[in-house]
Image (tube, rainbow, N blue to C red; front, side, top):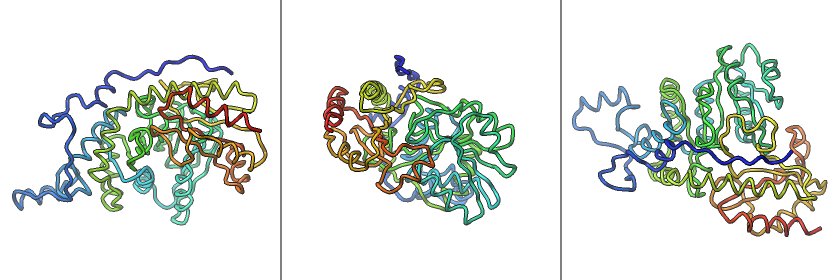
Length: 388
C-alpha cells in the first residue's frame, strides 16, 4: 500500500487559540506566572464562600491557579470540550480518570495497543476489585462481543501505541453510550489539532501534555478534557485528594509550547511522512507502521504526527541493537513529541513473549521524527541501514 498525499488540515480557530488571541494580560504578550501557593481573601465570608466551591475560587493552588487555569481553558477550546483539568503528568491524568470513575466490581475494556503504564495501573487496580481485558480486535462487532455486564469504561487509543492502528471512534463511542459505558480516548499522538474525539462521541480525552502539546521536552504534564459535570467530579474525587496538580511554572511552559503547536505539527506531519516513505521503499525494512498506510485511514484524523515505527525484520537482538546504536541524528530515549528526533525499541532483549502477546514484532523500531530537516534524518537512517 502506498502513501497517498495528504496535507495537514488545521482549523483556523485552533491556530488563533494556540497563539493566545483574545487573551487579556494587561498588555503583556507573554502570559504571566502566578507563582503562589495560596491567595489571601478580603474577608472571612469570602473565604467561606470559596471553601464551599473551591473549583471556582482562588484559595490554594492545588485547586485553582490562574496560570494553570489559562492553559486549561485553552485546551478545552482546542478539544471542543466544556472543561479541562491539567495534572502533574500524563499518568496523573490517567490515574485521576480511573479513580474518579471506577469502584470495586467494575470492568474496563481496553481497545488497541495502549500506553504500557496505563495497563500497569489497570493491573494494580485488580487488587481493589477492578478488572480489565484488552482486545486487539478493532472491529465494532468484536468490541461489542468483548463487553461485559460490569463494563463501565471503554479505554481507547487511536492511533494505538507502537503499531499506530486507528479505530472507528464514532462507532465505538456510540456502542458504549448505548450501554451506559463511559468512553475515554488518549489523544496524545494526534493532538487536538488533528483529531477531536469529543466531537465523535467520546466522553473524556486524556493527554500526556509532555509530548506534542509541550513540545520541547522540558515539561512533564497531563490533561483531561470533557464535560463540565465530569470534570467537576474528577476535580473533587481525584485531583483535590490525590494532589497530582500541575505547578504554575509548568503550566506556563505548557502554554508556551501551545503557541507554536500548529507550526510544529505541520512539520512533524510532513517530515514523518517523508521518513515513512523512505522506510517503506527500503529493502531491509519488512513493514512500516503509520496511519497513512491503513486502508481505513485517516478516519477521524486531519493530519499525522511524527511518531511511527517499522519492523527491521531481524531475529537477532544484537542486530537490532547495532542498528539503533549506529544512528546519530536520532537520539536514544523514551518519550516523544519534542523538537529532537528520538529512537526506541520495545525489545529489551528478554521480553519477546510479552511483545508477541501484544502483536508487536521483536524487531520493531519506533521513531519520533523531530524538527530537523527530513533529508538529514533520512540520510542518517540510510547509513545505519546500509551496514550489515
